[in-house]
Image (cartoon, rainbow, N blue to C red; front, side, top):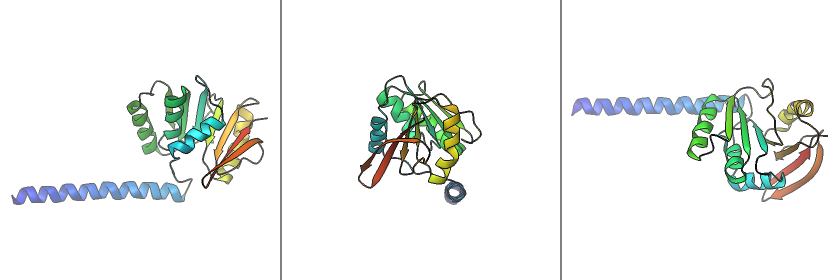
Amino acid sequence: MEALLILLILIAQMCLIVILITIGYFLFNGVFGVPWVRTRASLTDEMLRLAELQSGERVVDFGSGDGAMVIQAARDHGAYGYGIERLRLLVWLSRYLARRYGVEDRTEFVHGDMFKEQPPQADVVMSYLFKEVNERLEPILLEHYPSGTRVVARTFSFPGLKHITSKTIQSETIHLYETP
């Protein structure tokens, strides 16, 4: 009985250590970069509608987090999705969720730096990044994507892209841009 109690205490301690390491990992990355904040499914749907995403089109999400926007684009709109994420743990989660939702054949998630990776082909670019990060990303979009590529941004703007329209949903504003 005593051995079982010691074993349970050790397991509880190990679980606590794993939880603390995970929390520390996300806090460190949130402080020294863009923190991961999931976009609600209803807001993602509005973003995809605003972009007029069509079946078979390609979507890229820079800073894709858990892949929710890419997965939703593939699952609900028949798109092909690509996510770039710098947190390896979130890339693994994205791949797991894509399998769970049956869209692993229509999605790809890579661990990498959005400023160093070769941007994939895309008809629509999704973004929920700080304004300063968007400003750094903008030259990459202008260089790698043809005129007319749609860019949908949650909350934060792209100052040099052609603004098409904005839509406010509750307290959130989503912006639609096009590359010139």
